[in-house]
Length: 89
Image (cartoon, rainbow, N blue to C red; front, side, top):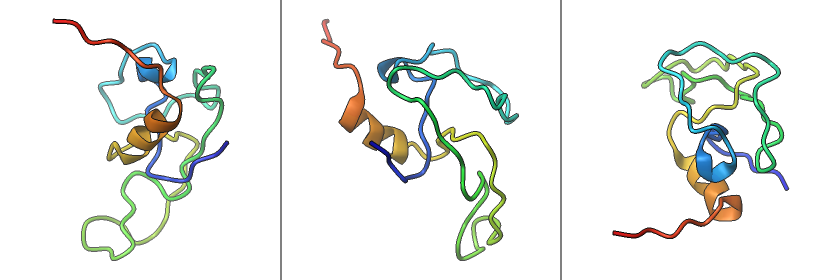
C-alpha cells in the first residue's frame, strides 16, 4: 500500500520506529531506518513547499527524507497501519 500525503514520521513508535526524534533540520541518510510499517518514502516537493508561494517556496525542492512537516500524513498512516496501544491511568 502507498500513501501520498504530507510525509510520514517513520521514527514514531506506533509505526515501528525508535521514538528517537531529531532536534535539527538535517536530512537523514538515504539508508534511513526502515521498519516493518514504513519501508520507503520520498519527499517530492521539499519541506518549504507552498503552491501559492505565500507561506513558503512555490518551487519544489525534492529530497530523499519523507519526514512529515505537518503531521497530517503521519495521522493518515497511523489510521491505516499503526500499532494500537491501550491507555491506562
